[in-house]
Length: 281
Image (cartoon, rainbow, N blue to C red; front, side):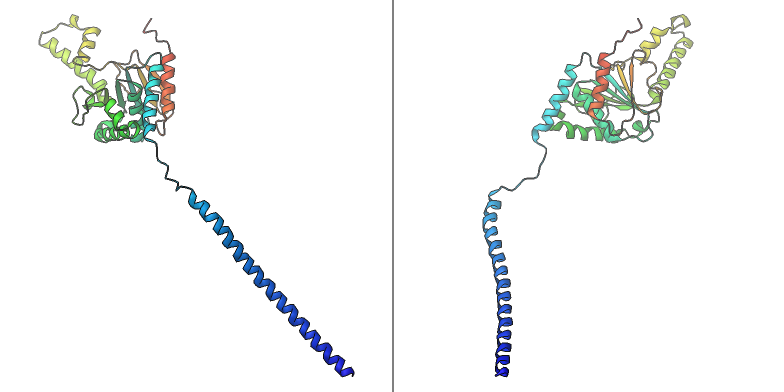
């Protein structure tokens, strides 16, 4: 009898283990099934919502952005009490950045400055005149757009003279590329011309004075003297920039032309507009 009870107990024990194993397997299957069910339900809900949103387009500058900037720069120029008719950009740094200089030229054009001279005392811009002109035209299109480029056309003068270069647009602003030869060398040439006139008895020494020399240096010149020169770099010197033409010129120093902004330029123009020029009085 004891053996029968022991056998029945072992059978029941085995059945209990089988029962527990089956329940565990059932729970695992149920959990997986529920997970798949929930995943499918969420997908069914979220996919239509996702499809209902329009595809986001790549952000590009609005066509009106250039127009807005152009009108803003023009309005800034008109808001100043006085605006230089002729501005000089004196680069006193070793490595010029053509894009930054071209930006300065285009901004000057946009605010309404008629004459812009670009100068360095090593003659780098003179030797690379075409490169600078190409960069100015490129930045003009970039900053002002096609319509703005037509409204703010530019004339390039070759070698600091009034002779037009071959890359010319009908002029509203005039850009001149200068070097030290346009300063001291022109004074020397004028002095030689006066000496020849005296030697050939066309003039006497009493006829030579500052007024005669001044008229000779400005002969056939339509470009006015610079009202303002922006000097970029740490050197505290005019570096031979048109020595005969800057007696009434205002100089403003800026740390560097590299990465210069429109705000830097406009701040300098505001400073010029607020300064009192006594003109020798």
